[in-house]
Structures are given as C-alpha cells and as structure tokens.
Image 1 (cartoon, helix red, strand yellow):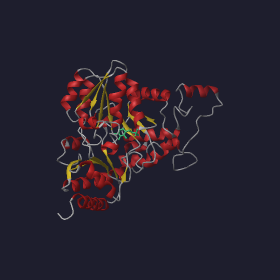
Image 2 (cartoon, rainbow, N blue to C red):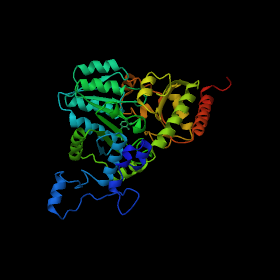
Image 3 (cartoon, rainbow, N blue to C red):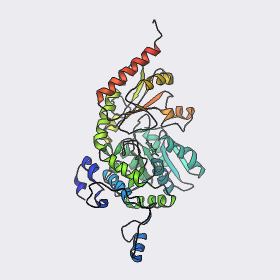
Image 4 (tube, rainbow, N blue to C red):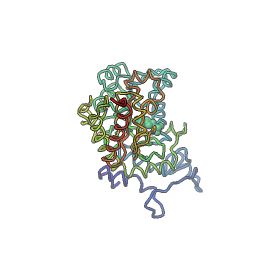
Length: 402
Ligand SMILES: *Cc1c(COP(=O)(O)O)cnc(C)c1O
C-alpha cells in the first residue's frame, strides 16, 4: 500500500480506506447489512472457512469496521487489528482470550478504573492471580515477573495522574518471563507513542477517546501480530462485543484529523500545566511534559509528544473543586476525555468512579484531584478562562473584609 511509506499524519487521512470505496465515492460507505449474499455455494463456503476474502455475517466482520481496523493497524505499525464495541470490551476480550484458571497476570495499580475492576473483581473469581505493582516502580514489576507471568499489562501515561512506565524496558523483561506484553495506548495515541515498536506484543485503545475525538461514538481496538490477533478475533466473534458500522464510520472520520487534534491538545495541555504551576491555590500538577514530573526522562524517550491529558489538585480539596469547575466557560464537566472540547472531571466521578474513597487513596488519588483533557480550542482562550475561574474561586474562599 502506497501510504505505508508516508508519515503518520498522511496515513491517518488515507490509510485503510481504498478497499471499501464504491461507486467512485471518495468517502467510506457505512455498510449496515447484517449478512452477505452468495449465489455460488462453493464461494460462500470458501469465504466461511477463510479460504477466500469476504464477509458473511455482521457479528464477525463488516467492510466499514474493517476500514477502521486497517487504519489503526497502519498507524500502530501492526500486522493485524481487531475491533470492539467499547474500549473495555477490547481490554476484557484480550485478557479472557489468553488467561485461564491458575494463570498469573502482572500489572500496575493505577490502570483505568474499569480495568482495575477486572483485576480486582473478575479475574480473582476465575482463580487468576493478579499482582498489581506501584505504578512507575519498575523494579517492583520486574520482581513480580520473576515469579512467572502469562500477561504483563501496562498503561502509560495512566489515568488520571499521568504516571509513566518504561515500555521498552518492561517489554524486554516481560518477554524474558514468557509473558504476552499488552499496553493500553489510549492516552498517548499512535501519534505520540507506538508500543509495538518499543517491544510490546499487543497495543490497545479505547477508540471512544482520542481516535474518534468527537465524543460521539464508542469503540475499542487491539493491534499486534496476526497470530495473537486471530485468537482475540475468534474470542470476540463468538462472545459478540462487535463494533457497530455507524460507530466505525464516525471513528474513521474522526481519525482523519487525529494528528492535528493531538498536536493542538498537547500545546494546550502544556500551557494549562504551566499556568497551574504558577497558581497559588494549586497543590500539585501532573503532566509528563513538565520537567518536575517523576518520569519526564522516560516520557521524553518513548513519546513523540506529551499528549493532551493532565491533572491537578487544589489546596481547598473537593470544596474548591465545586467552585472552580462550574465557573469555567470553555469546558465540559463530563466523564470523558480525548474530545475536541476541553473536558474537566474529578477523578472520583470519572476515571475512578468504580472505586471506593479508600481504594482511590491507596492508588494515590486525592479526593480533590481534577483531570483535564485539553481540547483543540485556541490556547489563549483556555488560559483566560482558567484565569477568570480562579478569580471566582479566590473571591469565594477569602472571607469578605479580609
Ligand atoms: C476510557 C478508557 C478505557 C475504556 O474505554 P471505553 O471505550 O469507555 O470502554 C480504557 N482505558 C483507558 C485509558 C480509558 O481512558
């Protein structure tokens, strides 16, 4: 394919679409047909058993969905990809494809809240041993790997305190231990980070977030070798968490502007991080692009850009959050991220709503922590907006007459 040689922004626009275009249309069609018509019984059979390319039934494959999978596959530099109805379906289906009772999985404490629930609630029920290490403590992960491991599951940067794990180092150690290394690349996007090139076996995304980018479609995707993806595809085909063709179309359309969006989001995130660092009422700012970040060096080494996600805590805790967030004009206060609109949300109602306050505290997530997903607005407007919102906060926190 031509675009294989192109740069990633060009691939985001063109890759994966050619095979599904019809009637000289320049845009991918949404093919909603549940089944496909064969008047040649032998051809039908050949497609059914995979001897010939084609589509049989919508739970298995669909041309629009396939174009989406192909685009992500090319952006991640993978051999194969398969998609899902949501990011959580991509994660759970991947884990359940390879894990069986008696197996062991090693991961980190602050994976996405839903992923953490799989580790703490569902896998133990199947007698799967889960070892969750302090995020960013590479030695702790290495120690757990030495005890044996079927899957090493990483997420970097993490949600919501944007902690970083060294993918190259951990992939090598994971492979030495005989593990399949899986990386949730949702926060970084393929524009900023390609885990497969750093040695991981599988990379997955909640496409709902940055890939789609417009907060109007749910989806998930996992990329890797043909051998691994075929097994995950088989699990999904039977268990049924299929991506809808309409959603696939919206995600595909969103992905055309992925590079432009991610670049502007990173620019805005850096400006917001710097603004917050200088703000008296802010206790802590978390952004991997700040030199003060614990793993700035690793982030700089493995990421092409630092991404659009950051978080901060306010000195006044949740009471201050309750004043600051409603005062913002250019912000959705919502349980979402990766959209074109800047989105603010406290961790306790967004990424870690599934967890108890005690569980969140154990993960190092203060009750008043606010996650920001920088949008694509003009930087100066976002800074102006924060400035006026902090004015409101100051007016309400300093007693009158003081
Ligand atoms: C949102 C998210 C998920 C889950 O994706 P859904 O599409 O909501 O199921 C998984 N991992 C990360 C890092 C996320 O942000």
